[in-house]
Each structure stands twice: as C-alpha cells, then as structure tokens.
Amino acid sequence: MAPGAAERGERPSTHLGRGAASREARDARVALERHRHAHRGAVRLRPLRAAIATLLPLAADFYSLTPDRVLDAVEVGGLRSTGRCLPLRAFENRVYEVELEDERRLVVKFYRPGRWPRDAILDEHAFLAELAAAELPVVPPLDLGAAATLNEIDGIFYAAFPRVRGRTLDELDDERLRQIGRLVARMHGVGAAHDAPHRPRLTVDRYVHEPLEVLISGGLLRGPLADRYRDVARRIADATAPLLARAPAQRIHGDLHWGNVLWAADGPILVDFDDFLVGPPVQDLWLLSRGDSEEARRGRERLLEGYQVFGELDRSTLALAEPLRALRIIYMSAWIARRWDDPSFRAGFPAFGTDQYWAAEYEALFAIFESL
Image 1: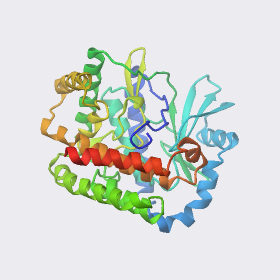
Image 2: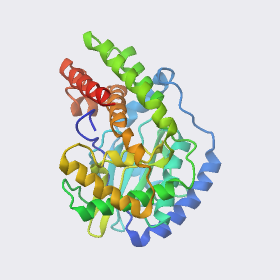
Image 3: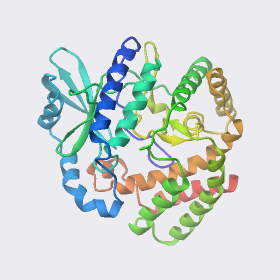
C-alpha cells in the first residue's frame, strides 16, 4: 500500500470457514466482554513524540521476535505446537503461521507496539465476532485461554486466527463484482448497528494535518516541493472536511482493496481489519472501483448493483472518492515515515523520501485537487 501505488503487504489468510463461524463468534463475544471488563482503560495512546522513548525497547523486541517467543505465546493458552513456525509477509504487524499437534494451523498476529491500545484492538475483535455471527465470511480471533482473544508477551499484544487458504484475483467478472458488492453491503449493515468508541474516525485532522506534521517536522518533506505539497494538501483538506461532515459515518473495514479480498472454494473472504475505523461507507467502495476508464466505470456500476441489493447508498457520497484517495496518499507517506526505523520498511520502500518520490506524490495530489 505504498502511497499512490502498491498495496500494503499484510494479507494473512485466516478465514474460519462458514460452517464454524457462529460457534467461534459466540465464544469470541464472551471472551471479549470478559477481557474488556478486566482491562478497561488500562492502555491509552500517548502523543507520538512522548511515546518514542518508552516504545523503543518494545520496538526492538518486536523487530527481533524469535520462533521460540512466538511458540511461547501460542502455548500460553494451553495449545501445543509441533515447533513449526513460519513467518508470513507483513509490514504493519508481525505475522506467523504455527502448526499445532492436532494438525490445525494458526496465524498468530503480533500487533505493532504503540499503534493500538488494548481497547481499540478489542473493538476490532468485537466487530469481527459480530460479522461472523451474522454469517459473513470473516475470521474472528480464537480464545487464547481465560476467555481472552487478546494476550500479551514482552509488552506486545497478539491474537491467533485459524489459517485458511485463498487467493487474490486481478480480474473479476460482473457476477463476482456484484457478489462483492452484496458482501460489503451486509458488512455495513452489521457495522451500522453499534459504535466502536476506541477506533479512529476518518477526519482530515487524522489523514492530512497530523501526517503533514510528521512529514515536515521530521525533515522528510523538504526542498522546493515542501511548501507546494503542504499547500495542496491543506487545500484538499479544506475542500474535503465539509463533505466528510455531511456524510454518514459508521464502522467500516477502512482498507478494503482487492488484496484484502481472498477467494476460496466457497467464495470471497474479507481479511485484515487492522485499519478498521469509523467513517463513510464509500471508503470501502472506492478502493474496489478506482479509475475513470469505461471498464472501470462499468465495474463500479456492477459493484454498486450488488451493494444495493442489501444496502442503501447515497450516491452523492461517491463524490468523496477522489478526496479520499488524496487523504490516503498523504496518510500513507506518514505511515511509512513513522516506521522508518523498522528494517522491513526500508527494504520494502527503497524510493521513499527521494526527490522523485515526492514529485510523483505532489503531481498525484495536484491532479486530484484540480478535479475537485
């Protein structure tokens, strides 16, 4: 999910299987309520600069997680592994596949220290449990023992999910596009039922002003383009803020690109709710229907046809698609900048911070601004 280009690398295939969804969802909900009550208010995010010194030791442990520590984490809840532990490709978190003695395979996700407080992660788990209870193809976390879906080792939060196989598809026919539209509408129907009090809201402060501060104060955005980049970003924020204020907001996936839709034998699976937030439903649609070519417009119509089978969409909110794309470009640059001390980011985004990088980002933002 490099700004304006590739998608972020984390795609753990952890679908539960539709037949077992209700049972696992029920267990997950019980675990969440007990765990949330026990730890309510225990952790809060602090401002970035104030947190750096505290997080450095945790970051070092996070970057150097060993198979032994991963297996220790899995076995805390009484699960027994065979000792096989395979790292999976991920940027934001650390993700491992672990084989159990009963031949099951789990995907264990270690959350990046400092990003989410405990209650925010539990909001994610609660949403997944609700979706699974409604028989949507998602993957709620497993009970790790003591009725908890979230545990901690060396100060790092982690959760375990069933491992499933699926693949991403680059091209979808009309029926598959309608199928995804129906699925997204059902997800939004569940999302509208409750709030997520500890998750972020999609605002220009979070997606423009705070990222700009990171990029400029950190000295990453400099030179002749810095003032122009900042100016166009702020103009986009000013134009977008009233549109967001008028749009209905609810629980949404938040990062629903095609890499987070896996196709299994029995249909699509929605994965990676790590960026789950409260925002306008159109955020979950524009990433699936980008572009202005005739083919892109046709695909978008098929997606919306499917969506409107189970959900209502105010089509005027589709005007947010390009502004939201601009917000994503700015936010993702700061996302990389905040993690630049992580060796995997330096290897994964070698062009980040170069003059060519900022020139391409500025040109993309300016083109969006001119279209508003």
